[in-house]
Length: 220
Length: 135
Image (cartoon, rainbow over all chains, first blue to last red; front, side, top):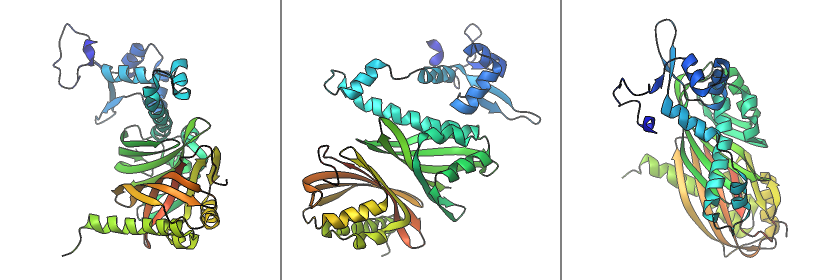
């Protein structure tokens, strides 16, 4: 796969396939889906689409290697063998039990991220335990209480398409886990422009599924 | 010589954790209550049973009674401005409910409030599958 080299530093070469896709039409054609579908994927599922700012209207582009990486992750659901490894520690592949849990946790976190990007509280709701709570400070005001505050805030804030979430830490202790997520380039009606948030999520493995029980945040 | 800002915050966080440890060791929830935020939550599984709510924790500590041989160790303290994560490992839990020699792993999240660092959540894993917290 020669296109997985960086599209940033590589010089344009005439005889190799284009490394960037320069419009919704090209991105849609590359993924063999409609423009409507790929726009929805960007809003809801983290399809990596970039924007160039222009005076009148921004244009979009995407790196083929990023789209391919996204597509590989997206289609990677745990198959029967992965599930068997998780439940049967005597399996010869039991060393991968950690990866099974790690991946399950990042899937839960991606559900949160997709909701944050789309500005859709309902989209992230499945990531949370029904009794989940939040706490933290926003502009000097302390927020503590039900996670319903988060869903309302996300709905009111609206889409934040340019957020760049990074997992700073994932620590798993059997049935509990802590995830430190750093998110830059928050935008929206409430977030303003280009804000940064540090989030610490605590997760609990309930009935085989990882759910967020607490979101602790610091808004920079 | 004044302490650095980091050490000041670190020491205050450890002091808050010490209240939790003292309450655990003596089996007196009143010693640890001031360490917790009024809206704090508590979550974890013990022997397949889900325990929720700080009231469950405080009742459990009081009913368990003294656990003089616990060996608490702070594994990590992470501070991000107004929030913090502390991982605590406690070996040698004993008492009326704990039995003997049980290990507990805790993840505490803390919030810096005008009244100091307060525990806003304790998530735990009880390393004794055969014995629930209410044994």
